[in-house]
Every structure is written in structure tokens, then in C-alpha cells.
Length: 353
Image 1 (tube, rainbow, N blue to C red):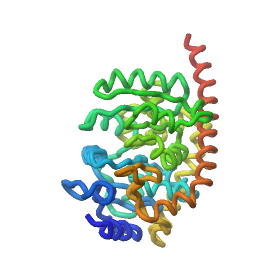
Image 2: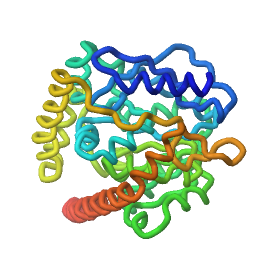
Image 3: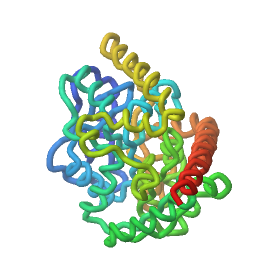
């Protein structure tokens, strides 16, 4: 695929309305990076929701796409878009700009309803991170070195232990909790570990902003924003029973579990998200700003070069300072939430023992 064809393809997807647009994973790999794009078995579809392109594919195809990008030498950041994250993207241009450089999968009933309203069809699967991350490590053809970053200290340590037991084919090479992540260079820790994958659990949108600014510097080939995955993996938070998830009402379960933190997000946030979607239905998608790039700013390319589409450096220079401030604010907020939750956990532990 030539540079012009890659550039034309991205430009074409900037102006999407109701029709789905073809999403070919080979478009994410710059021709000047690998010589030629990898073969793709079949095209995927992406759907623009609140100005963010969300890939519509099965879990199996998502794993296959990530493996192809890895083998092509492409550094890739992955986000799981729920209504809350897309609300953040709608209100904060820094988040929207970051997500244009991500591979974004659908997460939750809100995105499902938006797809039905805007495109008349559901997503093939609900690719939420809590289910997709285990599926990825079970199915990927690549043996990865994994770094876990975020959450409370005891949670991330337990998550590393459980991860080693559950996914023995992969190697956990390092952990860093969300508290220490405020005071040290987390990207340097990841780079020193030699990790090929970093799982970032800082909450939305802190984890996406961190990946946007630091994945390239970390040296990892793949970065996931995983939200509460470590808490669910370790049992620090109880996930909704299967029958509740089957009814697509997991958000109700989460509100019942953490009403003070999540009631406003879901009740007010869901109505706000619906307003954004209705606005897109009536008036068309919001302007997407700069086009997507083939790799994140700072991502190492062939022969020591940085390989991004021509406007990637412009995007990075416009957003880096404000993005780092927003990222730091989000990291502090995530740490404060973790501290409050830690107090609650210790109280519950004392009561149970």
C-alpha cells in the first residue's frame, strides 16, 4: 500500500456518517515502516460514534488483527469505548485526539444502543476489556512479556501472581501500582523490564492519556487501557453474575456496588451520551479534527525513525502540554479513588475477620 493510498484511506474515514466504513487493519501500518502492509483475511468495519471510530469485529478477528500488527512491528494502543469514555472524548478534545491514534473496541450496552440507532445493527460482540484481555492472552499466537501498571499496590501484586498462574505461556516482567506511578517515570520502568505488552489500569480517561503520551517511550509493542480488570481478576471487586451480564445490565450491578462513585456517572452520563448520539443522528457526526495516524507519537519505527502519518507530530505538539496536565490530573484522581477504596477494603477485611 503506498503512502498516498494510506493517507487517502484515513481521509475518507474522517467524514463518516450513518454508513459503516471499511476498516482494514493493514491501514494502521505505514508502508514506510514495514515496506508493505500485511495481508488481511477480510475487511473489518468501523462505526463513528461521538466522533470516535469504533471497530466492529469479533473477538477472534480482534486478536488476529493485533497479532498481525505486532508481527509488522507496529506499536498499537487499544481502548475499550464505553459511554463514559465517549462522553470524555465529546467534552475534552485532548481525549478525542488521543483516541484517534488508538484501535478502539466497543464496550457495553450504551455503545450497542448507539450503534443500533445510528447504523441499524449491533456490534458482532461486546468486546469489553474484562472479557477480551483473558481471551487475547489465551488466543494470541505471540508469547508476550507483560507489565502491569495501575490500581492499588496489593491489587496489582495479586493480579501479577494470578496472571502468572492463569497464563503461564506469557511472562510477567514487572508491576507498578498507581500510587508510585505518580512519582516515578512509569514508561522508563516498562522500558527497563523489556515488556512487549503493558496493561494500564488508571481509569478513563487517565489510562488512555497515559498510553497516548508514553507508549512509544515505554518500548512496549502493545498497550491496553484495562480499567478495573486487575480488581476483577483478583476478586477485589465482585463482577456481576453471568445472568446479569447476559441481560446487559452489568452497569446496574456496578452502581449498586459503588453508588457514591458511579451513580452520577451512569445516570447523568448515560443521558448525556444519549444526547450526543441523538445529536449525531440529527445533525451528523462532530468534526474529527486531525486524521488518525499509523502509529503513536514517539513510537519507534524502522532504522530508528519515528513512523507516523505526516500530521502525527502536529497532533502531538498541539496536545502534549495540556495532555500531560490532564493525564496527571486523571492519575491523581484515580489514585484518590484507589485510596478511598483501599480504606473501604480494609474496613471490610476487618469486619470479615
